[in-house]
Amino acid sequence: MINNRLKQWRHTFKMSQLALSVESKVGPSMVVAIERYGYFPGPKVRAKLTKALGITEAALWPDLAEAKEEKTQ
Image 1: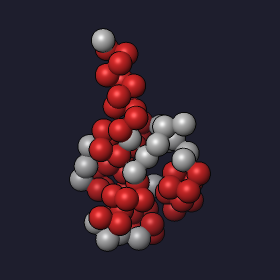
Image 2 (image 1 turned 90 degrees about the horizontal axis):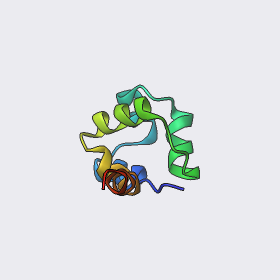
Image 3 (image 1 turned 180 degrees about the vertical axis):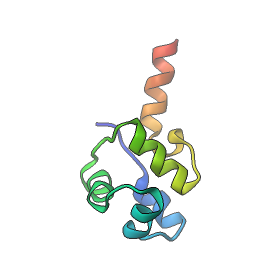
Image 4 (image 1 turned 30 degrees about the vertical axis):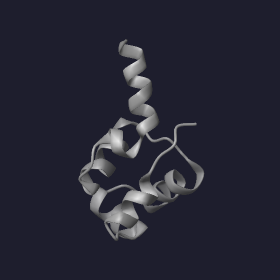
């Protein structure tokens, strides 16, 4: 499972799950699933969340960034 830091980043920016959902246009149930159950969303949802938070995908999913880096080597 690829770990995410969505909840940590959301708290850093003092956003509720609902506020992030509205800002990113990602359903609230999806935000909950990612935070609580470690659901790994597709690239479009990842892009929406990182844009709403103003962070990089690597910051939100560091394991994914490492996996991509290993593939290119």
